Length: 314
Ligand code: BDR
Ligand code: CA
Image (cartoon, rainbow, N blue to C red; front, side):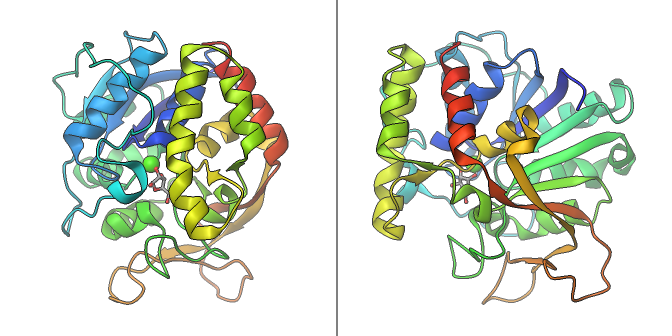
């Protein structure tokens, strides 16, 4: 990988999105964060945009450019996840009302213009929520597909199957039609599915390590992961909450901590029963051409060490 890597984070914060944004902001040597685009997902768009601003301000990065995007999926009604993330989407810490501006341009147009303005294949898109903005950009400006360096996204599952339904992961389920467009786009894709993120658990010791940073960021991250944890511990009986979205940024910083397979991934867009399922040909039983690197494993210990060390820089 050549650093720094220019990226756009497309997100629906969400406590785990928030930690991903903080990790990127803490890593300017490797990551040149061109902008943050927000989308409706965990909570409605006005809240995800507000939360993105609050997080940038928490990091002291008021100059970050934030663009609001699509307020609903392409083809269906918005499904949100307040039952996981709380009413605000960012329940846990008490953060001040944000003052930094939201840019005037729509997120979809910002994505298109940025990809056209930057040299070909030098910008990576990092979607951490439903794929509505990215798919809308690809539909509106098909020429950008050839200009994207890579899409590294959190979404889907193979062995873990689903979290929001028995068959689907939340980000893909909320906008399966958008996911279908992205997976058919021909753009190089790296996927962090539940198979990986369910191994990135915030155990008590890892939560204590955030708190022990003894900084505003460390304390806020500990409070966020404390809140978000309640739901997952109750649901899975696991030793902590999965820190889904930071795996995307972790991969950009330290790809050697992740392993997976280059396989074909198709999205179910028809069936009521399995809507949003990521049908990954993990065992190579079809002749469908590989279109994504589907990760399966993470070195969680080193990932959390890196995350904690980076958060300590803010
Ligand atoms: C994904 O859904 C959201 O609730 C999280 O922020 C993450 O992006 C996990 O399924
Ligand atoms: Ca998310």
